[in-house]
Structure formats: C-alpha cells, structure tokens
Image (cartoon, rainbow over all chains, first blue to last red; front, side, top):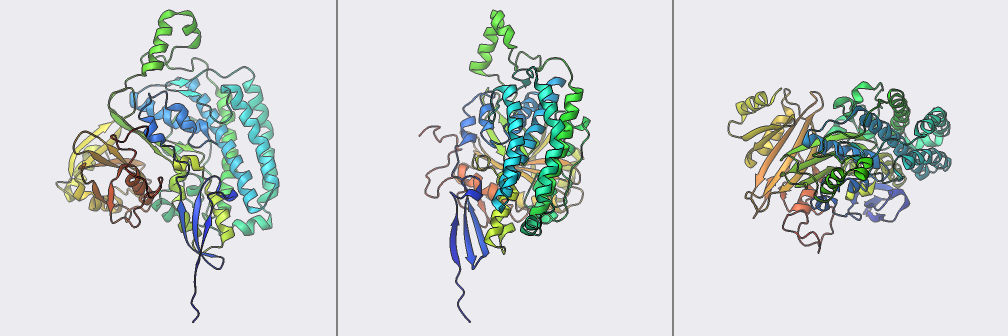
Length: 390
Length: 151
C-alpha cells in the first residue's frame, strides 16, 4: 500500500477570505482537510489589561474597538454591565434609542457579512448591493454621533446626546426601501444553484454540538436551537417589542445565510416599532453621582462644570461586587464580566467574545471537507478578528 | 430554584464542596473547593434538576497581593431552565493548577488556553494547553497584576 503523506499549508494570516489576520494551519490529504489548527492573536492589544487602568467611562471607546463592524452593540453590552453593577435605571427614551441603534447596527453588520461572505464564495454583485445599504446606516450613525464605525455614543446612565433633527425622517426613508432591498439580495442568492451547491450541507454542526462548544448567535440558531438573549434575558425593554427569532434546521452554511437574512427583516421591524413609540423625556438618568450633567448646564453653571470635571478626571467609585451582563450582538452573545473592588477603575474587565468562542468550533466544521469549503465556512461564522484577539 | 435550594441540592451529593454561597444583583455565586470542581461540574451538567449544559464564560482573576492569589470563574447556564450559576475556585499564587473542564464542555478549550496564556493558570488534563493570543516564546503572563502596564 502506498505511503499517504499529508501536506501542511498555511492559510493566512494575510489571506482575503480570513477576514483579517487569522492564520489556519491546514493539514491536507490532496484537497481534503485532515486537520485544521487556527492560530490567532495577531491583533492582540491587551484590551482587558488596558481597561484595568482606566475609569469606567474611559473604557467605552475601548469597546468600540472590539467588533468594529458593530460598535453600538459593544457599547451597549458594556454600559449595561456598569449600570447593573451600580444599579442604575436608564430613562425610557434612552432605552428606545439604544434598541433602535443596536438593531440598525445588526442590519449593518449582517449586510457587511453578506457582501463579503458572498464575495468569498464567488458572487461579486451582493457586495456592492449590501454595502450600498450599509452606508445609509453609517450615515445615520454619523448624524447621531459624528462617527461611522466607532460611535462611543452610549454613556453610563443613557446617551451622550439626543437624536439630531432630521434623523427620524431619514431613518424612515431607509426603512421604506429596505425590505425590497433584502428581496433583491435573495433573488441573487437564495435559489441560485451555484450558491446552494457551495453552501448546503457544508460545515454542518448539530444542535447538541453547538451547545457543547458554547456557540451563540445566528450560528447557534441555524442549528435549530431557539436561543436569543433578547428573548431569554430581555434588556433595554426588548420584551415589549414584537419580533420573531428565525431558526434553521441543518446548521450548515446555507441555513446560517437564511437565518441572518431573516434576522435583518426582524431588525427592521424592531427599528420601526422603536421609532413609532419613541418616548419623550431625558436621555440621561438623573443621578449626579454617576451621570454627567447635560452639556448646556456645564456651559452655564459653575457647579455643573466642577461636577463634570470630577467625573471626567477621577471617575466614580462603584459598589464592590461582580456582575455579568450580556446582549445578543450581531455575532452572538457578547458579555462583560466586571469585578469591582470599590474604586473608580475595574479590577477585572473580562470580555466574553462571541467570535472567539464560535471560531473555536472551526476545526470541527472543516475537517473532512475541501479547501474551498474552508473559505465558505469561515465566512459563515462571521468573525471579526479584533474581537477575537482583543 | 433559588440559591438556598441549589446549595441544599449540591450538599446532598457533595457535603463539603461549597465554601461560600452569595448573591449580588440577582447573580448567584458559589465558592467551591478546587478538588471537587471537576466532579461537581459533571454533576451540574448531567443532573436534570440543574441541566447546566452551556458554559457561558471561563476566566481567571488575579487577586495579588492577596493569597490565595488566583481565582478561576466559571459561568454556567441551563438553556432549558434559563438559569445561570457562577462557580469560583481559589488557587495559590506559587503554583496555580486546576483540572480542565474541557471533557464536560468543549467550549472550555480556548477559554482555558487564554487563562493559561494571560494569567499562567495551568489546566490539568487539557488536550492542548498552549499560548493562544501571545507568541509561544513570550515571557510572563500580562494579565497578572504584577506585570507592568507598559514595557
């Protein structure tokens, strides 16, 4: 019998389909993957260490730089954890705006995923279509906070400022056109025989395995697990919105595609509900111990200026204790575990990154498949390396 | 199931495992003995009244200069019951070691590697305990409190 030798191939770290700097050491028998070993950490910046030297407010911009295609969601998960730690109530208007922006962010993130994932597999057009709509969402973010990718817009206790004039009209205009745009993407892919042959039955993972690996987000739901943090542990008033959780059956690349497409439709519905109900009132909690005074007050009153200076320079001490707060980010369950020793800086700042844990199941999904399938499977997990490496 | 019931149920099987039970912001935490951790995790996953089938998070905490210096924190979830429970184990500073829970939840694999990489906690029985975020030749463990913030 002939001696069957395997060959080792490096995929990445500079490879267009790895969506950043992911290196996968592939052991190949011909074109079949025998073993896959992901090598990560090229983007490690020590965010968890860095955060221990910053006050609670100063950590917000760090969270933007985790999953940089979903900055709003990262902000939300973090401020929820701090608010839980100090037991702070957030006014209803701020909660509705948070939900609105995070659902827009989910659409933007899924659009970016759709475009790049389809492009990886060889479909060029969806990328142009998806980025066209994503850009409209980024314009909305720019109106709100002046930034397209790194918003740092949420504050402990509410928001940095209220929505600007003209936001609602522009957002409604986007929502009017968006459902037909999703139909457009679907005409390109959903029944496309090439797309189906490249994705159906590829990278399948069963429900039990998905739970064993701790997977979360669309990739877990595609494996027929009805689990969404927005329903299981509602935050920011999600229990009052009407929406469905799309789930798949086979847990393959195709089902992940179907789940994310359906999620975009649901998110658009939530945004619309948030706009319809938008309550009035303040966007910051009235709790001077932890919350910044409004900007106009800082410019008019000396006490407010001093108060602002104290919060900005020294931060605020929080009760000693530890909390875990998580949200359903576009990638999965994004959680923050904060340990406080009673000082104004977090003693331990732990991020539970969905991409990191989802990627850990990659070897299981690719082994026994072809090299070309590896590209499709990496895309279907929807990873952002900045979040994985932190 | 509230915290007291959880503790009572566990004590039936492991009379001395729980050192302390506490609750903060509606999150239950059990401090458990290191030698009981592995069988306890297996028990919590397989007993139907608990059914903690999902490992949400696993991380280390450095309490330097306190002794025992390290803590390993496990956050468990039961998807059926929508319940969560945090387990904590204290480990000495000179040789922090604890059994790996990768056999109970596969998702622990990379999280244990990360805790080893950044804090130097050894997980015995882990199938492939290597550094994960830093390069293999890196000296020291950056998340330790005595590791300088800038080099």
